[in-house]
Image (tube, rainbow, N blue to C red; front, side, top):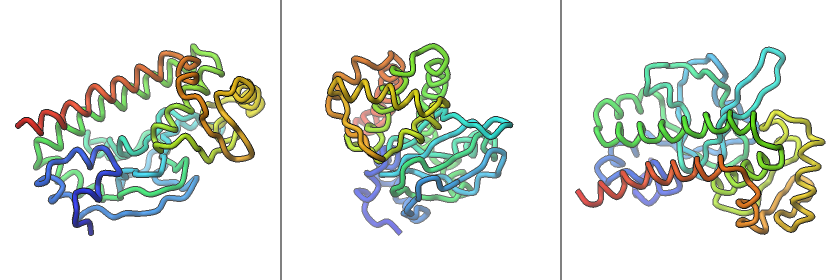
Length: 244
């Protein structure tokens, strides 16, 4: 059980809660360690738990009949999984799987629904998050269709370092290829060029971002658009609550 509001600050949504709101949620939150590739909910399955990541990154994956998949959104410390439980959907239309191991707060879907029905603040916060998440999903689809693999890779790396708040990523080129729905050879070539230009350093299973500004300059507009939408929507609610 959590006793201090500061315990929640690893996740931005939980950290945005005023004291009386987190006091209501805290008894229902359990800190858990998530393993890489751990399946949290499969497509079509009923959602039993939602997760608020602190250091883990969770992928929402669209899976085809032939077993191939592509990432449609990444969820880290800025958000949560299990949004359909708040809209009445009850089941996940996509696979939810841990991309990078780390910690998250787990809460039963039923407990979240109860708090969502009772709290005007929580409803406003979650609706704003849903808006931002839908922006990410839509922009990812457009990016995968219209932009070069190099630009997609830059966007993906920037999103990852934002989610973990670190320039060091433990990730393989095969995982990146799987997330973007492309061949590993394409990622190897694109990452090699970024490495040669001094923007990243990559070794077996690890990537370090060396020049973030340079990487942002090489990325497509999709990264900036999604980040601005998260920054525009979620801090506004925290500032409004502080003033009230």
